[in-house]
Image 1 (cartoon, rainbow, N blue to C red):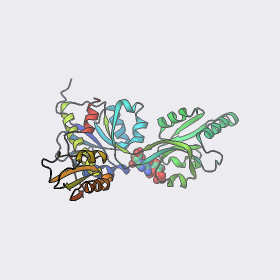
Image 2: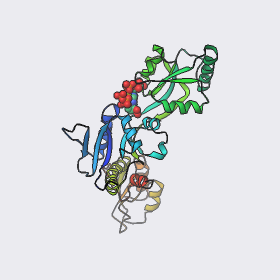
Image 3: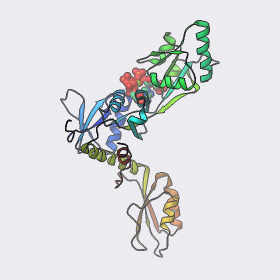
Image 4: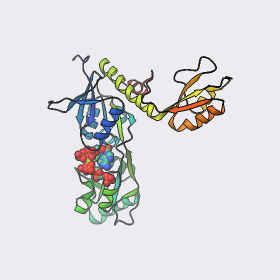
Length: 328
Ligand SMILES: Nc1ncnc2c1ncn2[C@@H]1O[C@H](COP(=O)(O)OP(=O)(O)OP(=O)(O)O)[C@@H](O)[C@H]1O
Ligand SMILES: O=P(O)(O)OC[C@H]1O[C@H](OP(=O)(O)OP(=O)(O)O)[C@H](O)[C@@H]1O
Ligand SMILES: [Mg+2]
């Protein structure tokens, strides 16, 4: 066996396309600065200030394959590509957290001219009729071959043939290479431009970019500690972004039910309860709970309450890392 002690954690980052900019921005917010190695023949880089990490720049679909094979430990890619590339996604990767960008929906779309075809059950009829009357199978253009097969099987549709598409999928019906398509859509503009419509129950998957970890990669001690560092920063940024710090001057009279108020508004006391009865207390609550919490504090006698955004909120717990480590 080779010595894996010094092997780095491989972090796969989109090198092009729609996810690239957003992915770099996401790491940047978490204080993880990507530095591309200049002169390297292949696309490699490092994370400034985080040792033991090798960054690899790959296309979104290559990232899905490398997570599947275990060549990459962590990566950013679309859930659509994960579900398409990995027959057993649950068993081979962990979707750590959705990232709020790269939204796209994988859909079944048919020509708008097919007025009577609105649902998957209508499509089943069309397919059977084509088979019976014309002796040929309904052709579906897609690059989502596995997602399409699975979805059609769930709807009991078997009379069809997949035409693998490598791009401009929506043009297939007009070009005569297929009758219908399965593809991703975001604004719907491409479907509209090609006179296609989504079937009412034709939504296969709502996807967005995710931070994904491979369960197939080799996770030595060095890689685990790099993982804690990377995910600790990501969690600190997420915790900070979704919460607010609420500081209150407690009433001189004392007698405020802090624990009760905190529980009611999903707030916590990250630095503990105050020592004396008067003084300042720091709470942290979900961003959407600040007004209710502040009102409650004032009503309970707080003399002043201020709310601030925070940049990072580090904590002893590292929920993202713990969830993954528990599965390794
Ligand atoms: N409108 C969109 N069109 C395509 N992909 C999108 C869109 N919005 C989000 N995505 C996400 O980005 C992923 C990668 O798409 P992108 O177009 O960047 O690369 P690709 O299609 O794999 O490569 P290329 O287009 O260069 O062949 C998609 O699988 C999807 O998860
Ligand atoms: O619903 P819309 O907002 O119109 O977006 C959907 C289109 O965008 C993507 O194509 P892309 O531009 O990535 O080209 P590709 O087919 O070469 O991947 C996708 O494959 C659709 O064609
Ligand atoms: Mg594309």
